[in-house]
Image 1 (cartoon, rainbow, N blue to C red):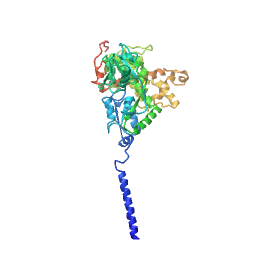
Image 2 (cartoon, helix red, strand yellow):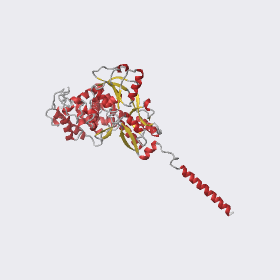
Image 3 (cartoon, one colour):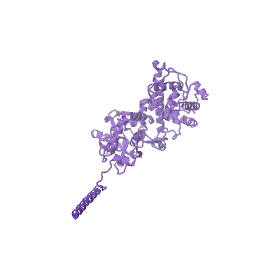
Image 4 (cartoon, rainbow, N blue to C red):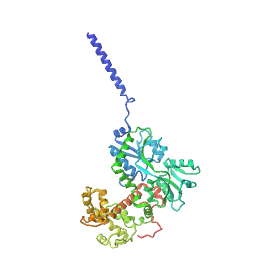
Length: 490
């Protein structure tokens, strides 16, 4: 009997040992379930992204990394609770090669069109921005108005771009069409080359022109080539769809909460605000006028601890950098100071640009410091711009109206909705300080912010020694040559 029990114990132990060995064999690395792309990102705590170095995607400014694509993908990384690490590709071919490299970046955020030619290289997210391919020509040259008129013109596009794909497809129906591709240029270079007449035409997306047109006064849109297309993020074609699904969820979220629209407004809104004529005019004034007053802006900014580019943006909105500007209401000079403000700021001659800039800088600093302490940046600066234009008293009325409506009196996006009411009797009759042209103030702040954004990009350190800096475009801080087409007013 005892022998029988011992046999049963040995048999059970053997079965148990066999089961354990089988279980351990199942845990072998070759048989274990591999983590998904999203799980790897979360485990490593890092989202590795590849992009392009351009004003529409990613660049460095005085505050660090910025750009439309960067800010959007940074929000995605924050949403995942991981660190963002960005690397830039030399060209589009390099970008897709890195994306498909084992152990390389897991996401490409670079203003990419989900074209048919790219579907073998990558899988794309849902759209977050619609763009239109546009043929660009130089003002003063013959303007093509249809594809057939591209024949016989020198055309240059980015190698590996969706635009190269478009032209290749067009060539099937127009065999005489000729074009060149280059991997040594970016969109900024293409626009510069058209602006300077080095090539006849290029093809870029509408958002790229919107961001760059203010730097190149001679570029114009000839016509739209094809229908609008969508930009999306990309993951390697061989990857699972876990990260892509999470990206789509995030893009839905930022569209619903309005932050995607705010980013679009931040980077591309200046075209809606300035219009094409205003943008080209600003580009010319960057070359012809700003160099005369740049040092005055910098000295005043250093003294009052404010960004000189913000002062320059205010000056442009006020007078187009014209030192003898005069309004019908009596404000005068480059910073358009009233007589009383000028006297209070110690300005003897409002038409002297150096004095006007110094007075405007001092006044802005006083206004900024006079705001309530519960405001934080950057809203505090936008409120200071509003007060510079309309006065702190009327701004206070608008803030109280915002609070009464359940809005945040310390958020510029909320208070700007109230300012136009100050010109409507049903509203201003209930305020302490009465009527004011609040709608003009909203316009003033919006324009100054656009000019400030442009000046921030054009003065970036990475432009020094670049093709942009080598063009005729004056880059403040780089090109110190005063143009000869206008007499010096210093």
